[in-house]
Image (cartoon, rainbow, N blue to C red; front, side, top):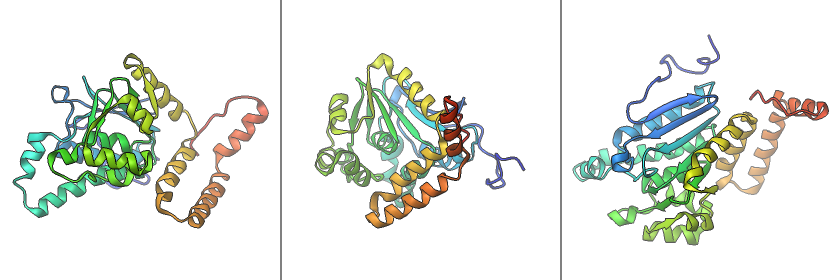
Amino acid sequence: MSDNYRFHASPRLTTSWEHFRFAKADGVATVTLDRPEKLNPLTFESYADLRDLLAELPHHQDVRVLVIRGEGKGFCGGGDVNEIIGELVKMEPRDLMRFTKMTGDVIRAMRECPIPIISAVHGIAAGAGAVVALASDFRVVSTSGRFAFLFTKVGLSGGDMGAAYLLPRVVGLGRATELLMLGNTIDSATADRYGLVSRLVADDEIDAAVADLARTVADGPTLAYAQTKSLLTRELDMPMSAAMELDAMTQALLMTTRDHAEFHAAFNEKRPPRWQGR
């Protein structure tokens, strides 16, 4: 059995996705939300596809970083008003719970996926789109980028899809309270000042900036990145003693890897390390 499928079940990996574009090249996977005429809204089907892709992605041996982007004038306008909200008002509580759990599963999968995720935000990132960006490891935002956690604007809780868990940990409780309760739109400069932006770039520089960051991550020590992401996620709610123990165990494990030995060899040979992810 090949390494590609050694830890995968009987079904083969999905080769094409219907509800967004998916491509892989040189270690970089890209999801493109591609309904630009409606600002790339999410639907029942695209939520489900994202959830399932994120479960599969660690089994793609040729993927070391994921980029999420939107086609056209914006990143993602949130859930489709008619295709989702129009249907939700007709659903029974059982099906509503299935839907809300599914949307949360997307965000949880983003945080638990060992592969670093970059969101490329230009134009609006609203509602679910803002939470997808929030759940990413890096947010490269152009000057036209805007964020709106607008759930209360439609009469729902601002704490949707894990936003009330993640956002205070990124921007602090005061800013998160403002953003989630009022649902107002903030521009890229404000988002940067709040700490929501990883890199702020000009509109015409975002593709190059995303490509540069993706290349840096894809060419880097993937095991070290994966474990760092895991620790950042797992230790959010841990007491310090448990976090220190997990840090120690993780670091001791990584000290046995080929990548750690490769750094030592490269240092002595005065050359860049050749990371293998092993």
